[in-house]
Image (cartoon, rainbow, N blue to C red; front, side, top):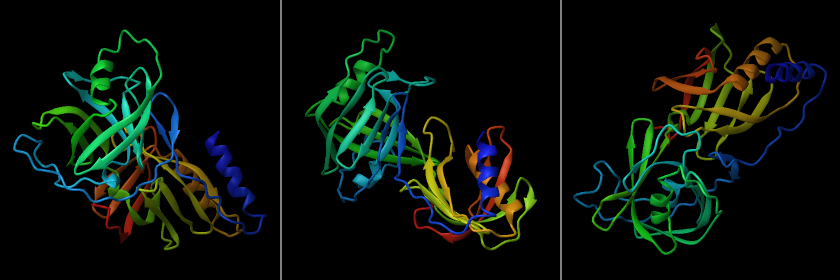
Length: 297
């Protein structure tokens, strides 16, 4: 269905004049609840105290921008959590948080100050889930009035967020995948294994804003980036809008739009090369970096 829709879109470009690219707001779908939240980040510089028993490699300062977005909770208290369809999560969004403890939906306010995060005004649903043993451990940490030192550790393409006790013991651990290597502008060098020699054929990723835009060599497009935190390097491009200028590069354009629609993951071949893959692991697009983004490391 996706492929048919995009091919029809490309065919329509032959007969229609130019129009504006359809822009839509950035959305993230969080966890099994299906709750959708806007992700807006503001930067507030704070300072944390480095402790001897804190996780090694953590950074000395954590800001709202650092913690913004969705994190999958993988450990709370004595509970280690993995291999669940409805993994618990928490999303930080400019002073508000949303999440799930694996059973019930949580939301409330948070304040990040002096390297500590404090929760308040928490509301929750009241489902009974006897099989979710870790629910209590999460609720103990994410509770009204509780304040914790917060640390972030980056390891490869993953980041870990820790909420710590006053002695530096990890009370809650959450992780997410780093897709910052995609940030910036890329030239399309191949589609489905076929070389593309067209400088106008490019794509630009903005991971922080969850937005993508580019040029098929004929028309401009833009859309939203969805990163599935449950799977490594998972990437989907959604709500794509395309201008409708007629040109002779329709075959290239159709192939590119279909490839973008089929993309489910991105892997880094080298610092300046990225491959987009479909659900079968087939390489549908090869990209070469043409513009370095400061957040791409």
